[in-house]
Amino acid sequence: MNIKINILEYLEQTVKTSPDKRAVIDGERSITFSELVNQAKYLATEIRNAVCSLNRPIAVYLPKSIESVIADFAITYSGNCYMNLDIKSPVSRTSNIIDLVEPIIIITNSAYIETAGEINSASAILNIDSIVSLDKLHTTDETKIANYLCTIIDTDP
Image 1 (tube, rainbow, N blue to C red):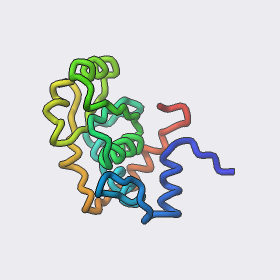
Image 2 (cartoon, helix red, strand yellow):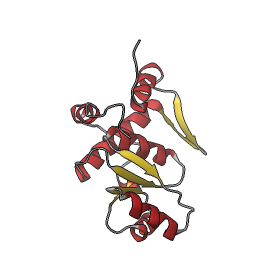
Image 3 (cartoon, one colour):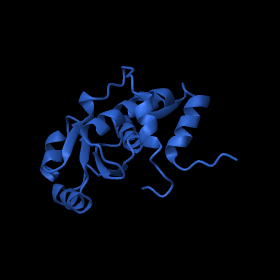
Image 4 (cartoon, one colour):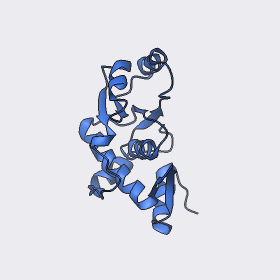
């Protein structure tokens, strides 16, 4: 029996068996499992290039969308843990949450980048719009991703 310890193992298995199946549908847009993994691994590499931390919180300040799912998986691929913030919450409430958790990065998009800077000016901000392109296949260093993943254990966040 093959015991899986995290969500990425399930995702990788799904990519092997159903790479062209739609993973996320967002209105008129959708992304397949293979595209999701490709985009997430590319963003994970960009996250690790920005900060070389493991098991640290990374905030996702995005509406519920394909990009927020990519960000969550990318953060997991990078060996960190994600915290999704509600973009509809008042800035003061979100700022309090950020102050408590102290994420090392906030991932957002062009529409919310200014607000992300308001809620926390101390964290690095990554604009997912300038990194991930849904119509473009990115190449990633699979060895680097494998090295991040080998550090993850079942009790990590």
